[in-house]
Figure 1: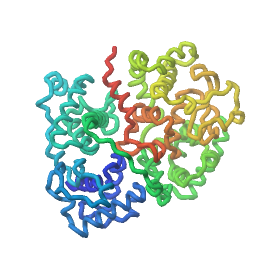
Figure 2: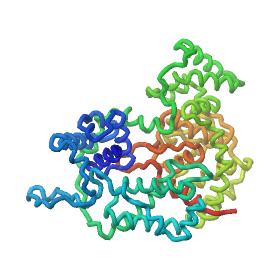
Figure 3: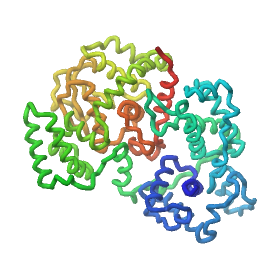
Figure 4: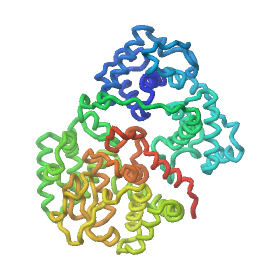
Length: 526
């Protein structure tokens, strides 16, 4: 109850706060020990700056201080229904232009209607109930019917449910029938498992509200509200840098290590790097034992150029796999290949038999494959097709991920100014199917000029985003997040790896990724 009260206390002051940010604020408050609404009076503006804009932080602190000084807890714990309107007050001429009606929203301090809400399972059609009880995923038609019925009952209790409200109800529904309603692809739960249902509920709420929603003129945002200069860059970036990581910044050296032994091993790896035939297992052990020092160098912002000189094996397959394992707890190559074996053919089948009928870009890509046959084996060909079709499906530009050069091109001959700043694969040849060599570029610098398979190049490119604290570019956000969740098994419930953009709302799970996952789950094939 205390958690929902704190959440509602935030939403009452900042009703338009995105769900992801609201969750971050809640976590921050918990971190400072705020367990009840009475604790909010002790929160300062500085406590909130890592997750909120300065003006937003000031508004929260001011509201909580005012509520505490006037009516200590009444403002937060009123038992009145959240959908009831307060006593009518005639506004003064001076304030009438800026005062909004509290009755237009159900998100006052206590969202007790959600706690009392009963999902109308008994009103669902028999065919749908049979699917749910038999743990079978309902057809899209039945799922839409379920959403309409549930939202109809929600709006009998509250005519303006918030995203927070629909999220809580979505959680309840998925918890009752997880096998039938969770976001799943080939047995792997995507994120917390309820995002696509919440998305459908929220969309239905918006559709029902639309005829009754008055058109309003947006007020002009003052420059101060976009001011983020007071928030240190490292604090703003850290949320994205630590996304998906289990050991982002180790606090202590291993007991068997000293700073001197770390330096000795670092020097030994530099010497080994010059050898033509180094032992990959030895490299893995040395990278694991010096992980503490590697993270210290990376997290303090050492440039890619400097890192490639000091820790050259981090950009090779053996070294990056070891570092990625320590960082995320996952095996970079094994996880990817295991998921390709489980899900790759299903994804390709969907693109060929369903998506190509709807999207011209996907159909064009499939036709192009017929003229680009190479020497790759079946698995490698499927991986190339999978990546190119994902780009086509999401309408994301291939050049942001893949750059093509002549087959005999050397690293020093690559035109660096044409490369994106984020990690990308340089293909040495006219197409990925026929190329025998690939390169990896980061920060417009070639950091690995001899990769012999597209699969290795793709894994090294993806791993670079995590190992070197690089955010997904907005231009590739859907393709990279789909690969992350479905093929690299990185499924955080909160946060995002997409680069920060003040003009674009970023959600914990990309809605376009959720839609593709839902379509795949609905796709029946033999």
